Image 1 (spheres, rainbow, N blue to C red):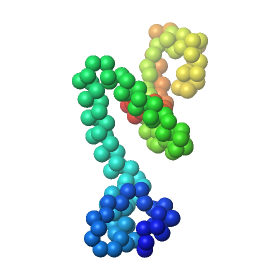
Image 2 (tube, one colour):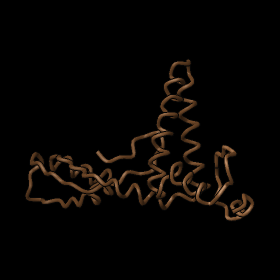
Image 3 (cartoon, rainbow, N blue to C red):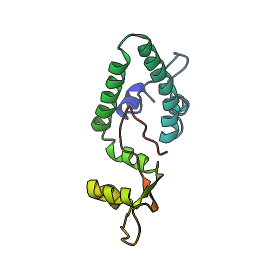
Image 4 (tube, one colour):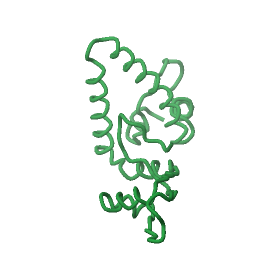
Length: 160
């Protein structure tokens, strides 16, 4: 298969070619499998490992230079936000974040729960707090719920 035909099929992103022998679909497919992986997720994990290393080096090098790290991290956050929007990755990212559920367990006295219900009722609703007027202010109540991290580049996005 000619290189022009491969380009028309939009298969090429980067193909190292040594010049030995004809460029064939089989050679390209072997390259795809070795460089990009057999599946999209496999390729994503492979490139994650490579990029983690590069990003780590960039952050550590920036930390050695006065006042560089905050700007480098801010640049990374802006890149993340732009990439998420430009490549329309909002939904798949949200789906991946939904897989990172964790339990949130809170224990407070009824007095604290009642105060929280006044100040931030949305938290109490999320934890399904129902006041029991028979309970004294100093009695404890433990509530739990599943939480899903939100998209926040530069901050942890894993459950505890």
